[in-house]
Image 1 (cartoon, rainbow, N blue to C red):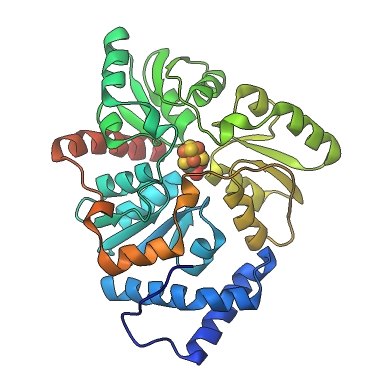
Image 2 (cartoon, protein in one colour):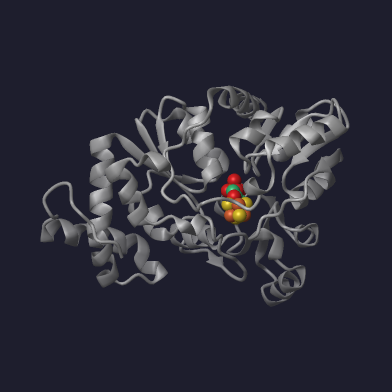
Length: 342
Ligand code: 13P
Ligand code: SF4
């Protein structure tokens, strides 16, 4: 663990014990001992104290590790809910414990705030696989066809698109657009899944999520046999053959809502492991079985990096976007909010 320098006096034994107990209450069920929680307590105390001092919030995606989610996050959710939280916050500083496209989206939606990303390595295989020029070429090839970009794209790509979407509203947004044809970028599997769901003809790009592309329908079939009463919830970035076996297809927000309102007691969440870790704690009466995988990008963030950002507000970790790009990208995002709330 990183060496922590304290901006204030070292926390007292009483403060450390009480913070360790708070963390253990949250993390104990995930196997964190009180001793480990004590070791983390000075770090979470310092981060939470700096947040107050700087009028900062930490927004965390559900794929973040439990120490971030339960230790320092002010808001946890899916891409849509986090964007909405970023848009509405009064805090001066947003530390985005997620990946870069999420932090860029926060900056686009609330440009007066300072937005920081803890790890410069927190990219995304989808967002990093398509450029603005690729989109311009697609538009030249298919003139007049509306372009829907998944939120997992850079600001440059959003700026070339007509409307943005997230996993939770993609089908609604595609249905709301005129015409039978849509350009949907950049996720190839999601495009195929949406084509089936919406009945529209979808022209797609060839990118894949490195986490969701590898889920295997044969393993899922075996799980179905082993746990016949479990509900199978599949992220829409998964291959169509996996999606076909699902009781629900959608984003992490859809999965969370399904589990929370379902009478079923066991679930297979075919997505990144962070979501089942989180729901396992929140819903101790429900059982989460089977498959999940780790996102190497999401897992680049850490408490130590969050602390570093809050201490020094380093320029290289602050999101800055050219105004001309930002204005056009913001239009695609605002259109998404308009269509998804209508
Ligand atoms: P959600 O909006 O479903 O949380 O998706 C984010 C993501 O990156 C999925 O891999
Ligand atoms: Fe990108 Fe996939 Fe990681 Fe989500 S899980 S951030 S889509 S690489």
